[in-house]
Each structure stands twice: as structure tokens, then as C-alpha cells.
Length: 249
Image (cartoon, rainbow, N blue to C red; front, side, top):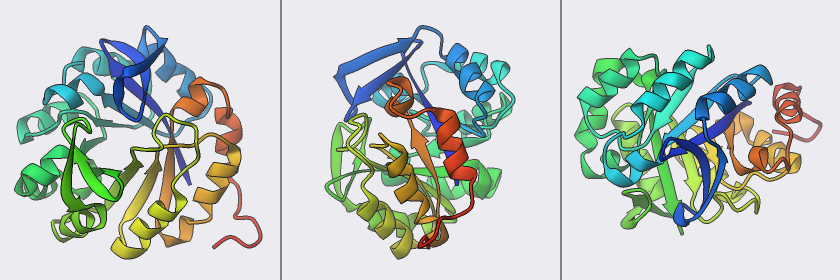
């Protein structure tokens, strides 16, 4: 299982929000590149980076910060936040981003997802599927659509999507545990590789996610649990990289 430390950028700084709300922000580092280096040094195999200003503004706003992160670390990076056209995808891949995360555009312009996969390959594109009560949320989570999360996932699979970051908004930044039922349902009903996001607070949460590995859940994103030190990254990596425990799928 792959652990993805999260770096959320707002106003050039590393922050965490609760349930995506701007009025519930905590600043952890003034320099996101600094914390990227910390996570790499501790052994992180990937970084999950989100341009929050881009998510809310409709186009990436922290490109220079992202460039500094890319220059700081050698591990692969997946990036989301306001990525809604082919030109932006090409620009981000050109500066060394390994995967772009497409969310809002998958609902509003699904043809662009298909064209992105055709042009850049399925490994370079991941669907960011953010759900509130089982429905897809878009525009920085400001709007909840009528489309169900599973419905969108199946539509995207038909277009060539092979990987989904599934976030339960009600759990994001809350340290209340992962929505294991929702993650399992997404994996089982879609047959797509899933990265679980939202709510990790303990090693037990990661252990529960790992039990779903053989159903297609390939990783978990960790944010607030790392910044609030409820889980040590090195311990999380040991658990993720270890052999499945007795009774696991």
C-alpha cells in the first residue's frame, strides 16, 4: 500500500482545512517545499499536493510554489487544484509533475478527461472524486451535484480512467477515521484502483484501509494526522509496506 503525505497550499503556505472550509484553516509551514523535504527524508514514496487557491479559483495559483517543491524532492508528485484544460496539464507535466488530478472538469467537461488520457496516458491522469453524502462535490467543494460518486466513477472508467482519489468530505481534516464502507463500495463497484482520502487519524485507520488492498484500494492520503502528529509517517510506512496480517483480504 502506498502512503501519500498531503501538502495543501493556500496563499503560498502549507495549510490544512476542515471539511474544505476556508474559515477552518490551520497554517503548518510557511514554506511547503520545506515540509516536502521532510516527508521525503522520512521515506515517503509519493507526495499529494493540492493548490487550494486553484481549487476555489478555477485555475492553478501556486505554480511557483509547486516548482519549488518539485526542485526540492526527487520522489513523484500528484497535483490537483483548478486543473481544467489541456494546456495546464501539459504545463504541469512539463515541470515534472507525475500525475495531474482532475475533479471539477470531470463533471463539467468529461470529454477533456478522455482527451487528456489519450494525449498524456492514463498513468498521468487521476480522477479526484470528492463526495458529500454519496454525491459528487465540485468547485472546491462549494457545489454538490446530483451525480452519485459511483455513477461518475463508472463514466470515467469508460473514458479510460484507471485510478481514483476518493475523498469523503465529511471526514477530511477531522481525524474521525476513514469512511471504510464508502472506500470499499467504490473499489468493489467500479473495479478502478482507489486511493483513500479523508479522516486518517491512527495506525488502525491505515490498517483498515490496507485490508482492502486486494479489492483495489492501493493507497491512502495522510494530512492532518501527520501535521498534528497523531501518526508518525515512518510508522505508517512500516505498516503499509509490511506483509498483510492474518485475516486480511
